[in-house]
Amino acid sequence: MSELIKLVDNTVRILRRDGIRLENRRDLVNGIQIRFTDGADSCRFNFYYSKNKGFTVIQAGGDAVLIKKIEELLLTDETQLPDETWIGTDEAGKGDYMGPLTVAAVYADAKFASGLQNIGVTDSKKLTDEVIREYAGEIRSIAPEYSIVISVNPAEYNRRFVQLKMSGKNSLDLLAECHAEAISRLLKNVRMPRRIIIDKFCPEKRIRYLLPAGDYELDLRVRGESDAAVAAASILARDAYLDGLKVITDRYGIKTMPGSGKKTDSVCREFVNKYGSDVLDSIAKVHFKNTLKINSLFPD
Image 1 (cartoon, one colour):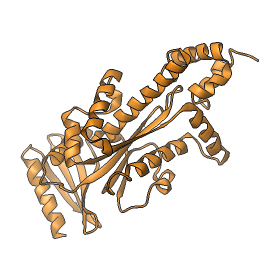
Image 2: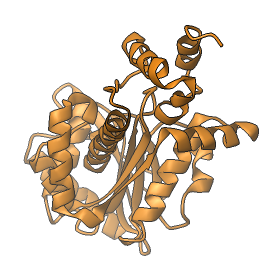
Image 3: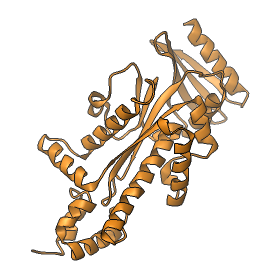
Image 4: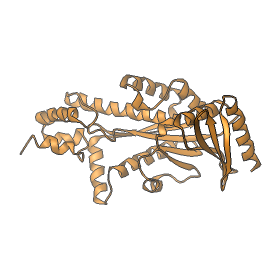
């Protein structure tokens, strides 16, 4: 416990330099929880230590901006978490009718996370496609062995969805399989991390049994893109999704459209008008309601 107290005291000292104060310290079963404040904003972090896993620091809720600020300060201070490693995952294409489902996993340590922050990595939903393309290239160039991307094209997606539906499962189970696959493949290139952070899309029981065995903390985090590795994964996943749209455009000669609204339906009608309704299985996720709307305009 003395090692853990030293870690917490060192953290408090580092954050105090930037005006972030300790408001409350609470003992946990196997750790210590600290509430930090910065003006009117506050957040909590849990600190753990074991001989097998070493130090683990996990955010436990509060103001998202302050959480991000604290994580950045700790990651850039090399004396704070020298052995901290983690994997972050995120997906793209889940809510898009056309194109693939893509999932990326990114391995990070303090040095890599600092590099991601230096190039401005953030949630892909806040970036234009052009910037995503640029950042994805930079992320891969920093450490190519630190990332894996899984891309499930529409035909494969539809085949797997039907199989899952027959066993009472749905598209979230398919997404869980893809996250687990990305993590498993990445672990062939890197050592086991202290944490795995997944941008939350399902309860833990839906994915835990699919994940590789190991002594790591599983963190299903709402707004997971506040973490540098998850943000990088969101960019790589979106970049791969854009690649998937381009493959369809090049193959069929009709420009694809992300999303699942009226504009996407209109584009898909062009595909059906030219190639027949069977083309949808190769360009779209056919269990979406869009399929019924599109096919209703092309009666047998």
